[in-house]
Image (cartoon, rainbow, N blue to C red; front, side):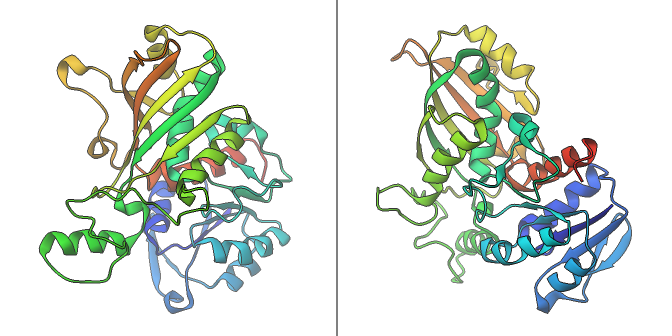
Length: 329
């Protein structure tokens, strides 16, 4: 089992390698891929050193699976070339997510849609992943009509340049900027570019991807995505309107028994999910469960996950695990 990691030196790529190692993924050969300037450098994995190779070299080696975190342009150009040699690509960029011929997968929600014929599989947006993990089991029971979500997203979702900007501002150092404004001691209601409808691209990703992953276009979603000066972990305030009435104790039980979720909801003892607690964890943490007192059939909840892990690297590796376990590669 040869596995290529494309974008192995990036923020998400390094976490992908860590997750593959931690979860003891059954690979026999690792093929780390990065830009030309990194070719030849060594990467350590499970006590062994592997040289970084170019995309062309990796394609020639025809790995069974290639997991990508190298940006949309690279994915659009290289993923079909891997697919041509029989490699199954799991791509972490936005390049293929809304392509109607490609599956968009969160294993806890819709891994069952995958087949051997799927040679390019899209990994969803980080903020969408954690939300649908919590929504799906509730949708199955009560049928969701509408979702209103506001996010509180870490700078790590932007990348190394954003992390450097935050730390530089904290130290009073002037340096390169990932954002149009200061991020330290500030909040930016602006993630990705603004669209003609006044929403940002990130907000529209959450709308469209939720419908596609959950396989239900009738679910209405509206989102406001916000960048906050936190180093790791995305948080979301989610209001869910159901078609059917619900029992709060039953909601808690459903979430506690759902795969990939940890319920942290004990306000009497000030227990609720926080990004620091989700750091380097693979689960989605859910808390602040309460009825929306302004609406008969609506629920409020607070959802937190490590955006570099479940929001990116872990979800990708989980897809690869599903492919191997179900003999789809």
